[in-house]
Length: 117
Ligand SMILES: [Zn+2]
Image 1: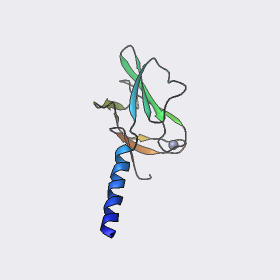
Image 2: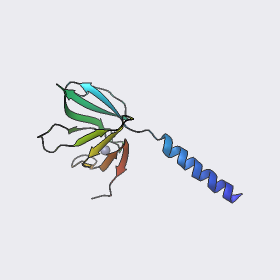
Image 3: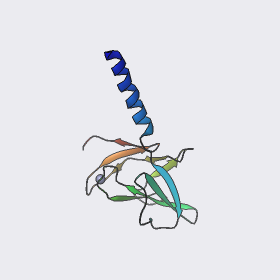
Image 4: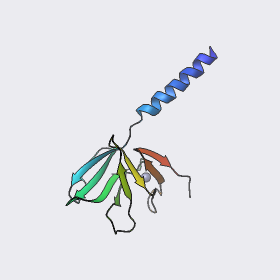
């Protein structure tokens, strides 16, 4: 019986991982973020065909909206790539030097936390 229970726990963990919401990219024309958007949306602002910036809620749950630059020539800037399912990958990692000081990567819509420091 124990083996069966272990197997069930494994399956449940797998299902849980599978259905964990991914970030989805929403592309918006303009240079300002919408007042409200979903916690699992990454807003890509596009003006005149250029990617300007991206905005999303801090994944730690502190409620802050993070806005990062995507435009060439701006420093610091991030590289946003979007896969065929609309999931964002950001390069390099996002490291907040204010507020909650979260440090994380976004890869294929998933948050990968970096260790403290
Ligand atoms: Zn935070």
